[in-house]
Amino acid sequence: MADLTTRLARMRVPLGFLAGVVVLVLARPTMATLGAGFVVAMLGEAVRVWAAGHLEKSREVTRSGPYRWNRHPLYVGSTVMGVGIGIAAASLTAAALILLYLATTYTAAIRTEEAFLRSRFGDAYDHYCAGRGPAKDRPFDWARVLRNKEWRSVLGSGLVFLVLVAKAYWMA
Image (tube, rainbow, N blue to C red; front, side, top):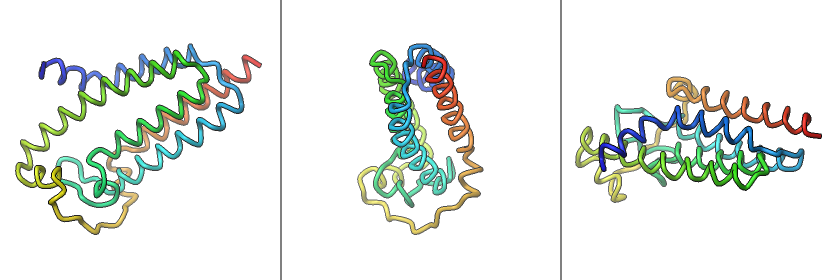
């Protein structure tokens, strides 16, 4: 089972592109659903940017910013973005596909990531998970956002919404 979990976690990006194409084909956006979905998706992206501005990936157990309250704020932000895209797509089938993709791949990714963090940081990670680790007062840093390549998520979500807007105009 661990092997399947690891494979699924590693396949989440290509599976995401495949699911994204299917969602865009199934989408029936309107201006109203685009507006509402965009607001929700941008809230999710804001969470991701906030998290990326605090994350020192694979170098420490990050305890600043949103990591004070949640172990996986990048996945939380992505999930909120997925909900926003589902709203914008205005298709129950597309929304169900998004939720299925997120539930399966992110569950696998979280399990794999937590096993890595536990092996790399040991007790420090266990204390963090138990809420016993000290919070860190580190300011948000745009350089970290860039170093963590969050621009890819911003670009990807922007392209998805451009396609959805084009599809809404084409369908009108």
